[in-house]
Amino acid sequence: MSSTNSSAERKKITTHTYRMKKKRGEIITMLTAYDYGTALAVDRTGIDSILVGDSLGMVVLGYENTLPVTMNDMIHHCKAVARGAKYALLIGDMPFMSYQASVEDAVRNAGRFLQEAGMDAVKLEGGRERKEAIEQIVGAGIPVMGHIGLTPQSVHQLGGFRAQGKSAKAGTRLLEDALILQEAGCFSIVLETIPAQLAKLVSEKLDIPTIGIGAGVDCDGQVLVTHDLLGLFDRFTPKFVKTYAHLHQEMVEAISTYKAEVEGKEFPSDEHSFDMAKEDLDALVKAFE
View 1 (tube, rainbow, N blue to C red):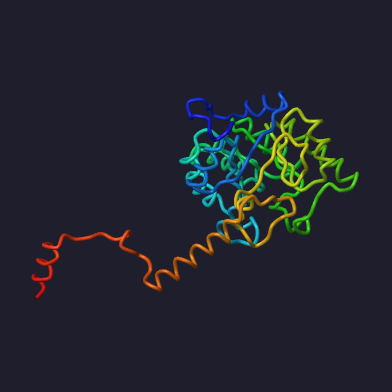
View 2 (cartoon, rainbow, N blue to C red):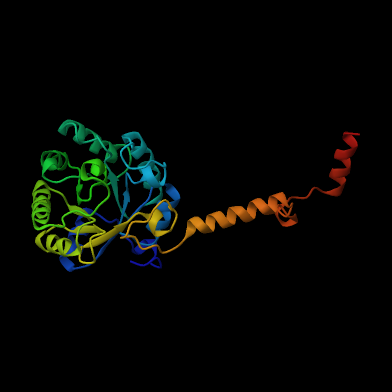
Protein backbone atom coordinates (compact mmCIF):
# COMPACT_ATOMS: atom_id res chain seq x y z
CA MET A 1 0.00 0.00 0.00
CA SER A 2 1.52 3.32 -1.00
CA SER A 3 1.31 6.63 0.81
CA THR A 4 -1.03 7.85 -1.94
CA ASN A 5 -3.82 5.47 -0.92
CA SER A 6 -6.71 7.23 0.78
CA SER A 7 -7.55 6.28 4.35
CA ALA A 8 -10.93 5.03 3.11
CA GLU A 9 -9.13 2.26 1.17
CA ARG A 10 -7.03 1.17 4.11
CA LYS A 11 -7.87 -1.55 6.57
CA LYS A 12 -6.40 -2.28 9.98
CA ILE A 13 -3.52 -4.76 9.72
CA THR A 14 -3.98 -7.84 11.92
CA THR A 15 -2.15 -11.07 12.65
CA HIS A 16 -4.47 -12.63 10.05
CA THR A 17 -3.03 -10.17 7.51
CA TYR A 18 0.42 -11.51 8.38
CA ARG A 19 -0.67 -15.10 7.71
CA MET A 20 -2.34 -14.20 4.43
CA LYS A 21 0.69 -12.24 3.23
CA LYS A 22 2.94 -15.23 3.85
CA LYS A 23 0.48 -17.50 2.08
CA ARG A 24 0.38 -15.20 -0.95
CA GLY A 25 4.13 -14.59 -0.96
CA GLU A 26 3.73 -10.88 -0.18
CA ILE A 27 6.47 -9.15 1.82
CA ILE A 28 5.65 -7.73 5.27
CA THR A 29 7.07 -4.33 6.23
CA MET A 30 7.80 -3.22 9.79
CA LEU A 31 9.50 -0.23 11.42
CA THR A 32 9.91 1.03 14.95
CA ALA A 33 8.31 4.11 16.49
CA TYR A 34 8.45 5.50 20.01
CA ASP A 35 6.36 8.70 19.81
CA TYR A 36 3.16 10.11 18.34
CA GLY A 37 4.72 12.06 15.47
CA THR A 38 6.88 9.23 14.19
CA ALA A 39 4.01 6.74 14.48
CA LEU A 40 1.78 9.08 12.48
CA ALA A 41 4.38 9.42 9.72
CA VAL A 42 5.11 5.68 9.54
CA ASP A 43 1.41 4.81 9.52
CA ARG A 44 0.71 7.23 6.67
CA THR A 45 3.14 5.34 4.41
CA GLY A 46 1.17 2.10 4.69
CA ILE A 47 3.86 0.20 6.61
CA ASP A 48 2.26 -3.05 7.81
CA SER A 49 3.35 -2.98 11.43
CA ILE A 50 5.01 -0.77 14.01
CA LEU A 51 7.19 -2.19 16.74
CA VAL A 52 7.55 -0.10 19.87
CA GLY A 53 10.92 -1.65 20.53
CA ASP A 54 12.95 -1.68 23.72
CA SER A 55 15.60 -0.23 21.39
CA LEU A 56 14.12 3.04 22.64
CA GLY A 57 16.48 2.59 25.56
CA MET A 58 19.40 3.29 23.24
CA VAL A 59 18.04 5.63 20.56
CA VAL A 60 15.66 7.68 22.75
CA LEU A 61 16.81 7.33 26.36
CA GLY A 62 20.56 7.14 25.73
CA TYR A 63 21.39 3.87 27.49
CA GLU A 64 24.28 1.69 26.34
CA ASN A 65 21.92 -1.25 25.76
CA THR A 66 18.28 -2.25 26.22
CA LEU A 67 18.61 -3.75 29.71
CA PRO A 68 17.62 -0.67 31.80
CA VAL A 69 14.28 -0.24 29.98
CA THR A 70 11.29 -0.77 32.29
CA MET A 71 7.66 -1.70 31.79
CA ASN A 72 6.69 1.87 32.67
CA ASP A 73 9.02 3.17 29.94
CA MET A 74 7.43 0.83 27.43
CA ILE A 75 3.83 1.58 28.42
CA HIS A 76 4.51 5.33 28.22
CA HIS A 77 5.90 5.16 24.69
CA CYS A 78 3.36 2.59 23.49
CA LYS A 79 0.51 4.90 24.48
CA ALA A 80 2.00 7.71 22.40
CA VAL A 81 2.43 5.45 19.37
CA ALA A 82 -1.13 4.13 19.68
CA ARG A 83 -2.43 7.70 19.46
CA GLY A 84 -0.62 8.25 16.18
CA ALA A 85 -1.07 4.96 14.30
CA LYS A 86 -4.50 3.67 13.32
CA TYR A 87 -3.82 1.09 10.59
CA ALA A 88 -0.52 -0.67 11.32
CA LEU A 89 -0.37 -3.73 13.54
CA LEU A 90 1.08 -2.37 16.80
CA ILE A 91 3.53 -4.59 18.66
CA GLY A 92 4.87 -3.81 22.13
CA ASP A 93 8.33 -5.12 23.00
CA MET A 94 8.43 -6.80 26.42
CA PRO A 95 11.46 -5.40 28.27
CA PHE A 96 14.13 -7.24 30.23
CA MET A 97 12.81 -9.07 33.32
CA SER A 98 9.15 -8.43 32.44
CA TYR A 99 8.69 -12.09 31.43
CA GLN A 100 11.81 -14.04 32.45
CA ALA A 101 11.16 -14.43 36.19
CA SER A 102 7.85 -16.29 36.00
CA VAL A 103 5.05 -17.22 33.65
CA GLU A 104 2.66 -15.26 35.83
CA ASP A 105 4.74 -12.10 35.38
CA ALA A 106 4.89 -12.73 31.65
CA VAL A 107 1.10 -13.02 31.25
CA ARG A 108 0.38 -10.05 33.51
CA ASN A 109 2.87 -7.75 31.79
CA ALA A 110 1.83 -8.86 28.32
CA GLY A 111 -1.74 -7.99 29.23
CA ARG A 112 -0.71 -4.46 30.19
CA PHE A 113 0.45 -3.80 26.64
CA LEU A 114 -3.04 -4.46 25.30
CA GLN A 115 -5.13 -3.21 28.21
CA GLU A 116 -3.24 -0.03 29.08
CA ALA A 117 -1.09 0.83 26.08
CA GLY A 118 -3.27 0.12 23.05
CA MET A 119 -1.01 -2.47 21.46
CA ASP A 120 -2.31 -5.32 19.29
CA ALA A 121 0.41 -7.84 20.17
CA VAL A 122 3.63 -8.28 22.12
CA LYS A 123 7.14 -9.42 21.22
CA LEU A 124 9.54 -11.28 23.47
CA GLU A 125 13.02 -12.71 23.05
CA GLY A 126 14.21 -16.29 23.38
CA GLY A 127 13.69 -19.79 22.06
CA ARG A 128 12.65 -23.03 23.74
CA GLU A 129 13.11 -21.55 27.20
CA ARG A 130 10.15 -19.23 26.51
CA LYS A 131 7.78 -21.98 25.34
CA GLU A 132 5.62 -22.12 28.47
CA ALA A 133 5.39 -18.34 28.82
CA ILE A 134 4.36 -17.97 25.17
CA GLU A 135 1.73 -20.71 25.49
CA GLN A 136 0.21 -19.02 28.52
CA ILE A 137 0.25 -15.54 26.97
CA VAL A 138 -1.35 -16.83 23.77
CA GLY A 139 -3.81 -18.79 25.92
CA ALA A 140 -4.84 -15.49 27.50
CA GLY A 141 -5.77 -14.18 24.05
CA ILE A 142 -2.65 -12.09 23.47
CA PRO A 143 -0.83 -12.49 20.11
CA VAL A 144 2.92 -13.10 20.50
CA MET A 145 5.77 -12.39 18.10
CA GLY A 146 8.91 -14.41 18.87
CA HIS A 147 12.49 -13.20 18.50
CA ILE A 148 15.54 -15.45 18.06
CA GLY A 149 19.11 -15.14 16.79
CA LEU A 150 20.80 -12.08 18.26
CA THR A 151 18.62 -11.26 21.26
CA PRO A 152 19.80 -7.88 22.64
CA GLN A 153 18.48 -8.54 26.16
CA SER A 154 20.99 -11.43 26.34
CA VAL A 155 23.88 -9.30 25.09
CA HIS A 156 26.12 -10.17 28.05
CA GLN A 157 25.39 -13.88 27.76
CA LEU A 158 26.07 -13.79 24.01
CA GLY A 159 29.33 -11.91 24.46
CA GLY A 160 28.25 -8.78 22.62
CA PHE A 161 26.27 -7.82 19.54
CA ARG A 162 27.49 -10.57 17.22
CA ALA A 163 25.96 -12.79 14.56
CA GLN A 164 24.35 -16.02 15.74
CA GLY A 165 23.71 -19.43 14.16
CA LYS A 166 26.89 -19.47 12.10
CA SER A 167 27.79 -23.14 12.72
CA ALA A 168 25.79 -26.23 11.75
CA LYS A 169 25.14 -26.99 15.42
CA ALA A 170 24.02 -23.44 16.24
CA GLY A 171 21.92 -23.28 13.09
CA THR A 172 20.19 -26.55 13.95
CA ARG A 173 19.33 -25.30 17.41
CA LEU A 174 17.98 -22.04 16.02
CA LEU A 175 15.75 -23.87 13.56
CA GLU A 176 14.51 -26.11 16.36
CA ASP A 177 13.75 -23.03 18.45
CA ALA A 178 11.79 -21.49 15.59
CA LEU A 179 9.66 -24.62 15.25
CA ILE A 180 9.09 -24.71 19.03
CA LEU A 181 7.96 -21.06 19.03
CA GLN A 182 5.58 -21.77 16.17
CA GLU A 183 4.14 -24.74 18.06
CA ALA A 184 3.80 -22.58 21.18
CA GLY A 185 1.52 -20.23 19.27
CA CYS A 186 3.64 -17.35 17.94
CA PHE A 187 2.04 -15.63 14.94
CA SER A 188 5.44 -14.50 13.62
CA ILE A 189 9.14 -14.62 14.54
CA VAL A 190 11.89 -12.00 14.25
CA LEU A 191 15.20 -13.41 13.02
CA GLU A 192 18.04 -11.07 13.99
CA THR A 193 21.64 -11.12 12.76
CA ILE A 194 21.87 -14.66 11.46
CA PRO A 195 23.31 -15.98 8.17
CA ALA A 196 21.04 -15.28 5.20
CA GLN A 197 21.10 -18.95 4.19
CA LEU A 198 19.87 -20.02 7.62
CA ALA A 199 17.13 -17.39 7.61
CA LYS A 200 15.97 -18.65 4.20
CA LEU A 201 15.82 -22.22 5.50
CA VAL A 202 13.90 -21.22 8.64
CA SER A 203 11.45 -19.14 6.59
CA GLU A 204 10.79 -22.08 4.27
CA LYS A 205 10.25 -24.51 7.16
CA LEU A 206 7.81 -22.34 9.09
CA ASP A 207 4.12 -21.83 8.38
CA ILE A 208 4.21 -18.47 10.19
CA PRO A 209 6.03 -15.43 8.74
CA THR A 210 9.57 -14.48 9.63
CA ILE A 211 10.67 -10.86 9.99
CA GLY A 212 14.33 -10.31 9.28
CA ILE A 213 16.78 -7.76 10.63
CA GLY A 214 20.28 -8.55 9.48
CA ALA A 215 19.01 -11.90 8.17
CA GLY A 216 19.05 -11.48 4.41
CA VAL A 217 16.41 -10.94 1.76
CA ASP A 218 14.58 -14.26 1.95
CA CYS A 219 12.63 -13.65 5.16
CA ASP A 220 8.89 -13.04 4.85
CA GLY A 221 9.34 -9.44 5.97
CA GLN A 222 11.87 -6.89 7.14
CA VAL A 223 12.21 -4.52 10.10
CA LEU A 224 14.62 -1.70 10.87
CA VAL A 225 14.95 0.78 13.70
CA THR A 226 13.55 3.99 12.21
CA HIS A 227 16.24 6.11 13.86
CA ASP A 228 18.85 4.05 11.98
CA LEU A 229 16.97 4.27 8.68
CA LEU A 230 16.70 8.06 8.98
CA GLY A 231 20.25 8.61 10.23
CA LEU A 232 19.02 10.05 13.53
CA PHE A 233 21.22 7.85 15.73
CA ASP A 234 24.92 8.34 15.08
CA ARG A 235 26.53 6.42 17.96
CA PHE A 236 27.01 3.42 15.68
CA THR A 237 25.39 1.87 12.62
CA PRO A 238 25.03 -1.93 12.41
CA LYS A 239 26.19 -3.63 9.20
CA PHE A 240 22.63 -4.64 8.33
CA VAL A 241 21.30 -1.06 8.33
CA LYS A 242 20.75 0.91 5.15
CA THR A 243 20.60 4.62 5.94
CA TYR A 244 18.02 6.32 3.72
CA ALA A 245 18.57 9.84 5.10
CA HIS A 246 21.04 11.70 7.31
CA LEU A 247 18.70 13.68 9.52
CA HIS A 248 21.03 13.91 12.52
CA GLN A 249 23.51 15.97 10.50
CA GLU A 250 20.68 18.02 9.01
CA MET A 251 19.42 18.73 12.54
CA VAL A 252 22.89 19.85 13.65
CA GLU A 253 23.21 22.15 10.63
CA ALA A 254 19.72 23.62 11.09
CA ILE A 255 20.25 24.25 14.81
CA SER A 256 23.66 25.80 14.14
CA THR A 257 22.08 28.17 11.60
CA TYR A 258 19.36 29.09 14.11
CA LYS A 259 21.97 29.84 16.78
CA ALA A 260 23.97 32.06 14.42
CA GLU A 261 20.89 33.97 13.27
CA VAL A 262 19.68 34.60 16.82
CA GLU A 263 23.11 35.79 17.94
CA GLY A 264 23.34 38.01 14.83
CA LYS A 265 19.80 39.38 15.36
CA GLU A 266 18.76 38.04 11.96
CA PHE A 267 15.97 36.04 13.60
CA PRO A 268 13.23 36.90 14.31
CA SER A 269 12.77 39.20 11.33
CA ASP A 270 9.75 41.38 10.58
CA GLU A 271 7.96 38.46 8.92
CA HIS A 272 8.13 36.48 12.18
CA SER A 273 6.97 39.38 14.38
CA PHE A 274 3.66 41.05 15.23
CA ASP A 275 2.80 44.79 14.95
CA MET A 276 0.81 47.11 17.21
CA ALA A 277 -1.27 49.91 15.71
CA LYS A 278 0.49 53.27 16.01
CA GLU A 279 -2.27 54.85 18.10
CA ASP A 280 -2.15 51.97 20.55
CA LEU A 281 1.63 52.17 20.74
CA ASP A 282 1.46 55.93 21.34
CA ALA A 283 -1.11 55.40 24.11
CA LEU A 284 1.03 52.67 25.71
CA VAL A 285 4.15 54.83 25.67
CA LYS A 286 2.22 57.78 27.10
CA ALA A 287 0.82 55.61 29.90
CA PHE A 288 4.33 54.84 31.09
CA GLU A 289 5.73 58.38 30.84
